[in-house]
Amino acid sequence: MSRLVHSLRIVHEATRMNPQKITETLLQQRLSLTSYVYSVCRNYHLAEDVFQEMCVKAVSERERFTSKDHLVNWFRVSSRNRAIDIIRTREGRYVGLSTETLDLLEENWTEAGDSWRELRFEALAQCMEMLTPRSQEIVKLRYFENRSGGEIASFIGGKVESAYQLISRIHKTLGNCISQRLEMESQ
Image 1: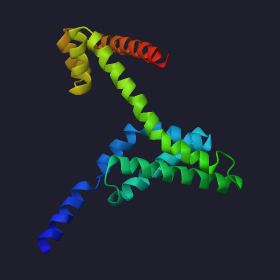
Image 2: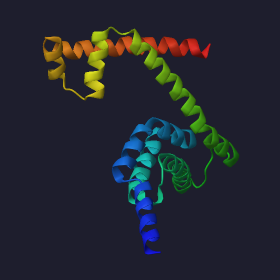
Image 3: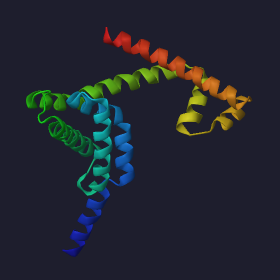
C-alpha cells in the first residue's frame, strides 16, 4: 500500500505547476488576461493591478494547479471577482456587466482566443515561408536560439547596428504580411 501512496505522491508532484511554469504561463497569457479583467472593470490601471496581485497569489497557491488550463481558468475567475470587489469597495457598488454576461464572456473567452491565436500562428508560418532563407535563419538564430545582436552581426558579416536594422526590417515585413493575411481571413 505504501508503494501506491508513494507513486501517487510522485504523480501528484509531477502534475503540479512550479513557480516558473506559472510565471511563464501568465506572462504568455498577459494580454488576454488583462484584457479580460479590463472588460470587467473598464479601468486599465485597475486591470494591471489586479493582474499583478493575482500573479502573486497564483505563485503562492501553486499546489492547487494541475495544468495550464486550470491555472488560466482559475486566474480569470479570481481576477474577475477581485476586480468587482475592489470596485465595490471604492464606489460602494459594481455597475458593469451583469453576472450572466460575465459568465458568457468567460465561457467564450478561451475559445475566441484560441481560434484567433491559431489564425495568427498560421499567418506567421505562411509569412515565414515567404522570407528569404537568410532572413529565416536570422529569425531562427534570434528567437529560437536566443542569439545576441553581436552573434547575428557575425553571421551576416556586419556591425551590430546593421544586425538590429535587419531584424527590424524582418519584423516589419512579417508584421505587414501577417496583417494582410489576417485581414483577408476576416473578409
